[in-house]
Amino acid sequence: MKFSATKEYIKVKTEGILNLELLSAEYGMTAEELVSFHNRHCSISELLNISLPKYVEYIYIPTDQFGIRDSRLLKNTVLEIPTVSSNKVYGVIIRFLPKNLQIHYIIKVKRTAAYIELNKEKTYVNNQGIDKIIEQLFEKAEQVLYPLQLSLHSKGSIQKILNNKDITQRWEKEYFPKLKEYYQSETTDNILEQLDKAYTDIDLKKDLFNRNIFYKLFFLPVYQGYPFFSGKDSLKIYFSSLSREAGYETEYTLNREYTRGNKIALKITGTEDEDPFNKNRSKGKVDLLYKFNKETKEIFSITGSLSTFEKEKEYTVDFQVYEQKKPE
Image (cartoon, rainbow, N blue to C red):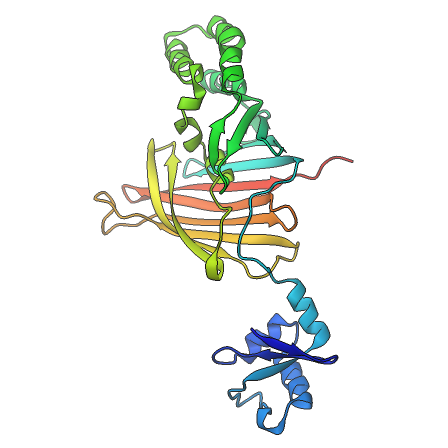
């Protein structure tokens, strides 16, 4: 909206049909308060009646209310990738339905001008430590990745694993020999053989990260321009319980206002692509909300869900990532 200002009020140019209820709410006023203020300062031809609103070119807004509203508005539709150096701690909770399986863990994220480094702590399943042998094996083997140093593309997706050689050396000299000695069975031998192939050159195994929902969503290429506060893209998510990907056409909506917590909000919604297997059948959805730090643009939280259908049965992943407060 265009506007002109005096000491007491701001003249805001209206766009389209005037919705008094919506407009007054934006400025923290009731419709009656807005009409009363407007009529005290406008010309006779601009007078409004709350029960019979008419078209007016300008609406008169109290200067202080306009200032409060203006301070909450984004001034730029470009979400730029963070450039600050920082250390963040995030809590991750992922719930898989209909299995009703929940995992959670803490992951530490160090950001520098040259790279981003991650360290993942112990994984809990349904609030319990992992006790099954195969799950323990994967959990211990996964720790070879950390610390994990990544370079990113300009939009925030993973470009390259920078400490690939360090990971390979840790695997070959420390993790693989110990795990092979401790876990001795035909099943664990086969798993270790597959892990050995993957970790020998982890940089060539990007699918390990594409299939991990945390890495997929935390490093989604969201740092870009959003003309008219919106955009479109596509998304592929791997559902481990079904051993397949689901594709979605997604819409991005950048909130014009900061949240009550003074964060930038980006909504991502979408519907599963149609294919020969789901034609004329139920389709999954994407419903995610990203919140970013107002100043640094770093991720504050990601919440939402993704779903797909298999034989008319819905499979859902509920996903939550929250920045944790640092201990005093």
